[in-house]
Image 1: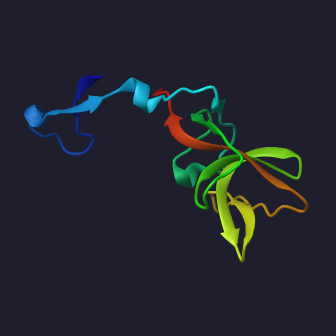
Image 2 (image 1 turned 45 degrees about the vertical axis):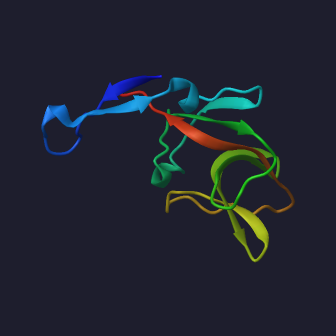
Amino acid sequence: MFELPVIPAGWPVDASEGCVVFDPSALFRVTPRTFALRVRGQSMVGAGICDGDVVIGEFTPEARPGAIVVALIDGESTLKRLVMHHGRPYLKAENPNWPQLVPLSELVVQGVVHTLVRKVR
């Protein structure tokens, strides 16, 4: 664990504003169930997840509504937000140009995302 200095991303402020404590092991908690996947596509930009980002999460078949999940829907793999409507699950894209995905036969949650990694270019 170590401290990182704070840097404003808005208007410049006094540089003596302080530090935040940073524990890399807490940020990238790694267990045998941890996965990392590179995102391809723009369907989750409204959730701040962009093409080329890496999502990190845990393999689990259970997720709460509102969670961002890796799921199989009718045999196809995707990253979307899990939503329940009248007791039935569907997957919500976070981009108004993409459709919501309602399963025809099967929706299987494979894992839940908890961390986003983006390389600054």
